[in-house]
Image 1 (cartoon, helix red, strand yellow):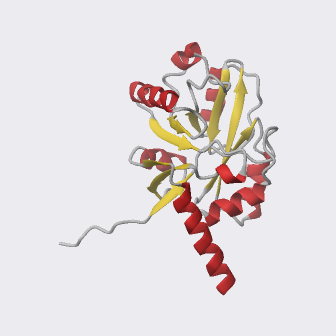
Image 2 (image 1 turned 30 degrees about the vertical axis):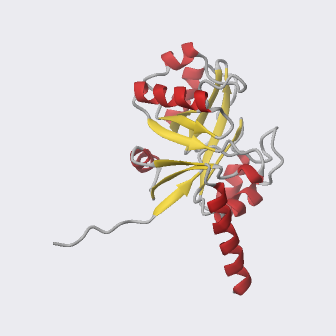
Length: 220
């Protein structure tokens, strides 16, 4: 009887911003390069109300990129992942979620209870309960209580668990990440995300990996 082959796991940070967002100055290419050095691959880019940087980064062919967008809806923010085109802000939360689905994208509810961010309203969450694919159970910018409530909500909704740094600076990238099997496309990603592991507070280990990467590059 053959022993099962253990496949190497990948690391992904599902909530990242670049200078395409109004509140970040991180050049998209630098975000991708640092992500690679930290062992984060592919790069998920979820800028506010735009996919411009993610699409350009993907088109360059130098990086594996998942195109996302943190969309401002009439009831708060909502992330779309694996998007083919930008979704305009200002729609209702339900219409936004429907437009994400129409692109075969994934509906990702981020920081649902964080009072310091434009989170989705309780009424909108109830209205969209059947449309959520992923709930962010750990946001590096949210406190522990807020993240615990998000995990409880995920269990009620039966959604897959997501996590992200919500990085707006290069130094924040990878402060929390998801460890999971490699995937091919949105549906495969969603299935494998259900068996993933959220890793918190391990940025120092990632920075060690970055240092090793730089050393190998210098030796070439």
